[in-house]
Image (cartoon, rainbow, N blue to C red):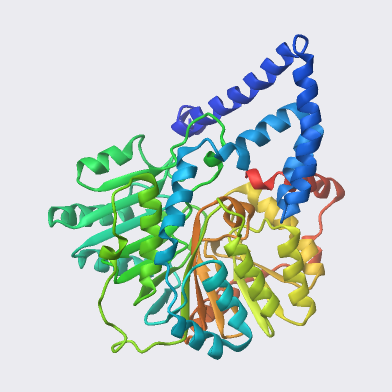
Length: 510
């Protein structure tokens, strides 16, 4: 019955159409090859140059190795698929062009207060380089931390999210990878309807693929009928192209420009443990107040206006509420975003910089561990310097194949001195780095290829705040109910090692 429902669901039908499309292209090439052998020859020659081009331009070759292997083993279909799904395949996309244009047009609004930057760099000491990187290279301002609240579970934060939504007077912006009908979303939706009736500007973005099995087809139209402006991001279609491979994995909720929420949770019942799927769902939420909310507002508006041009003046959404006197600044905070449409891997660079600067410890939450050689080397080098590096992954998986790929990295990391733990009560979905009682980053970026290279993501970098210790305590509490994976447990037989060595090559597509 479940298989029948999957096959005839929107997801199942889309996947079948994609398979048929691939089979069609391969069959067409085979049928045409006797008649147009010169085309086959051109593609074979082109495949050699494409491989050389990939190798020479790649900044993360282990992530691009999939294409090298695919084109080497099957030059003609491999070249065609690469052209569809790689950077080449993005150029014809209006979505790609609009996002790039809007990102460039709004960049000047991410304005850095030079006095704040100077103060942050002076006080951060060895972390000044990271702060400069986020502000000057990545282009996301560093602010005085005027309000950062960390919640170690979705159910702890959910009532506060509802409270802030009820207090909205001007606008509500919601951008999430997954929205699923149920008690959590219905609680939010009821408030959104009330707010629309009160004249509040309510906008929702959800990822079409992320929500493909959780929302009815054309759900955005249903919300529009209720006065809720809605975008189903990057609608899924069976025609392979580069932009289809990039999803909006962000989690952003902004109310009136005065408060923002982010973290690991999506808007579905399992994220607040109203529904059990894989044991206890361990996740987190962050609430931000003060000037730093502006960066979240800009990230949302940039995406919104790329897809649905509506606003000429973003400054109308900037809050002028003064809260510094109530909440004295405590360290430094920098919300940041990740886009797959440029050559700067902001999330990966921030993670690696934390590891490279760590002196005493670096603790990590990640639901998936599918990493390239750069990240592997950064983890092992930190451990070899004497840093206590610990990674906590799920004890109960949500995806068996991804779970086995995650475990395939254990042996190499443990041999390199990294400690691996599995969260015994269930599935851990939090994405956290915390380091040396001075640094933490929380957000949506998993330690996997899709988050680090292929998705739109967001996070928060926190420096020299007492809140770093709150994040650390969550990790300590989680370690106390997690299983420490031994070297013996991380070993696999030769066949298993061979299979997953091959599977890992194609991990960027998973």
